[in-house]
Image (tube, rainbow, N blue to C red; front, side, top):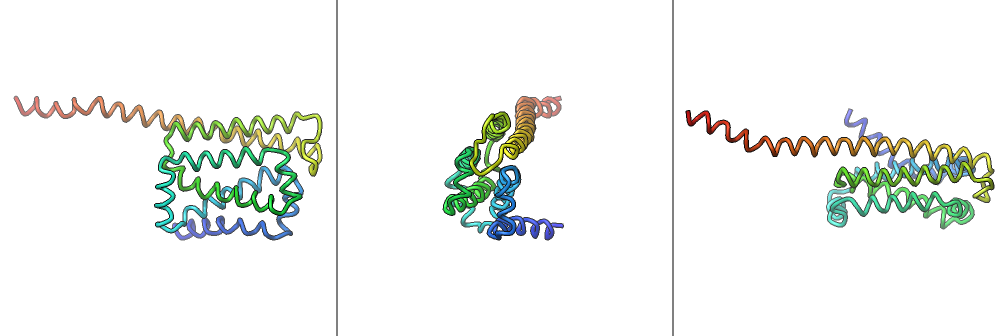
Length: 211
């Protein structure tokens, strides 16, 4: 099972190279919804999978640079915000350099996030997930309810489909944020109970032995 899981992660990490194939890239990028709802998450996931197999030396350096996981989470938030902008989507189709920047930014965000996320505290993780939720739902509503085309290269109907999809992704992340916050609150409550019961638990044997 472990070998199968490791092989799956390696394949997922290598999947980013598949976007170099025009036969795959062009149909996906011709659709606004497929690009935003499928390609972006897959690039992020590929980077995350690659980050799980970094050399130990590089992992330690990244941990030293991002001890609390805040830098990687902030970078991922900025990448998401950038690629919600209609002009950025148009430029990625028209300019090869911008297209490369799109692939690398999502992939790198996933790689760094895989390293920093385990060190991110419960409240901070819930905050960043909540922020991503807000961005996705806001952008989705803007795309869906806009009365004109926001992107030169995509049709109006495609824009509405992408908007609905972004709202759906936002709701998923919002649910994850609530689960993360609930788990952290539960752990904090258990830790507080353990601290309160600690002195009483240690005092009980002393009273018994005194008898």
